[in-house]
Length: 238
Image 1 (cartoon, one colour):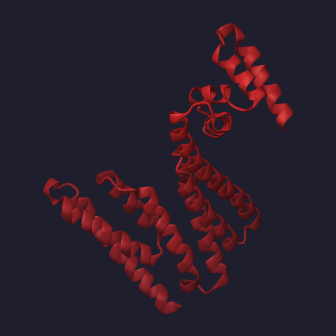
Image 2: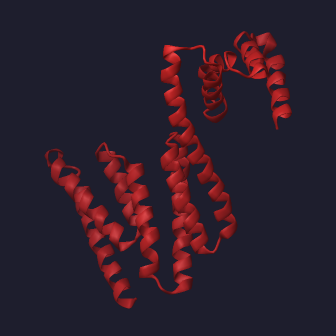
Image 3: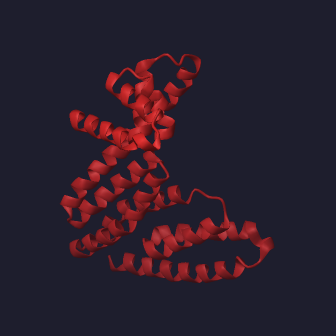
C-alpha cells in the first residue's frame, strides 16, 4: 500500500507540472493540437493518480479551450476512481474518507446532468454517487440517491418512448394514448407546459383533457381558476 501511495504521489507531482505547462501553452494560439494532446495526457495521469480535485480542474480548463463532452469525461473519471480506490487504499478508515470526499465532489455533476436533461447520464452519475455514499458508510444517503438514480433512468426510458411517439403522431395525430404519454412527459416531467398542453388536450384522459383545454384558453382573469383546477386534479390523483 505504501508503494502504491508513493506512486500516486509521484503522479500527482507530475500532474501539477504538466498543469503549469498547460497554462503557458494555452496562451499560444498556434499550439492547439499539442495543447489538446497535453490535456488528454494530463487527465490520464490524474485519472490514474486518483487525485480528483486537481484532475477535475484540468477538465474544467480543457472544456474552456475545446469542444468536448466534459460531463461524460467527468463521469468516466468518477467511475474509474470508484473501482480503483479499494485497491489503492486498503485501510478502511482512509478508504471511507476518500469515498466520502468523492461523494461530495460528484453531487454537482448529478445535478448538472439532470439540469441538461441528460437523463441517462444523470442516472449513471447517481448510481456512482450511491455506491460512493455506501462506501463511505452513509447508507441512508445511498438509499435516497438510489431513488434519484431510478427516477433518472425512468425519465431516460420515457424520453426514448416519447421521441418515437412524436414521430408516429406526425403521421397520425389522432392517437389519444400517445398524446397522453407525450403531454404527461413534457408537462409533468420537463415542466414544458406550452409544448405539452396541446397533447394533453387531445389525450385519452378526460379530466386532463378538460383542464388542459381550459388552460390553453385561459386569460389573466382566469389564471386563478385554472390553477385551482390543476390543484384539484392533483389532489384527486395522489
